[in-house]
Length: 250
Ligand SMILES: [Zn+2]
Image (cartoon, rainbow, N blue to C red; front, side):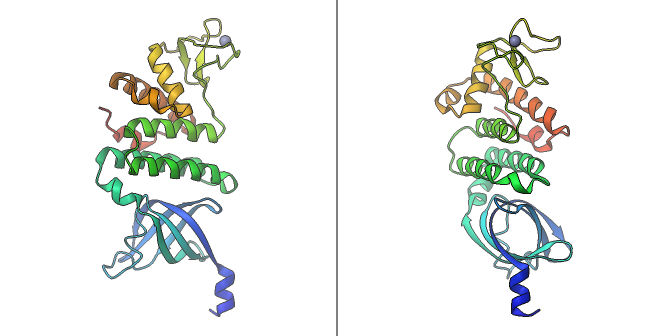
């Protein structure tokens, strides 16, 4: 390949490593979320060899600057440099690591085939992974806040204040996942839930990022909110986000 052909086929991008898969003897396929190119799946050659410089960089939850070339099927990494080594901090904290896994799995689902609308999702995921890595809060609450905001960014904003059906100002004490949040007594369809008022207040705080309210919540309130968030994610993503089931709530 000539230098000009290489330049035409190559591109640089910032990205977050979501997942890696083994390929052949020494290679990996890397799922990379990028703000401008969407979700990129590309081959990193020789990275499972101990001599590989790129190997430690192309690990889950690392933010990198990468150079890639377009391949016939998958793109191929030619360079990767660390911007933020979130993966190292997360590997040392099981709860944060599991929350990060659930975040990237959700991001991957939301960004699949969405090349143009990925930049806001990238910012959101990057902020959430960075917060987990620096221990900015309870991992479960950071996860639930991320999930509610990621769904909102995808166009499925829930409401935990005004009635989702008629707009009647709250607080309301009934919640309907299929409708997307709280419902007033007049609108309440059969099968709606009646969570504790503090659970609804916590959901509202997680959606808006009101950390003092989230941090002051009781563990059982967090668990109740987590169940509702997981139900809401599943309703919209249809398939169960597997990692959500693995996140332990204490
Ligand atoms: Zn209503």
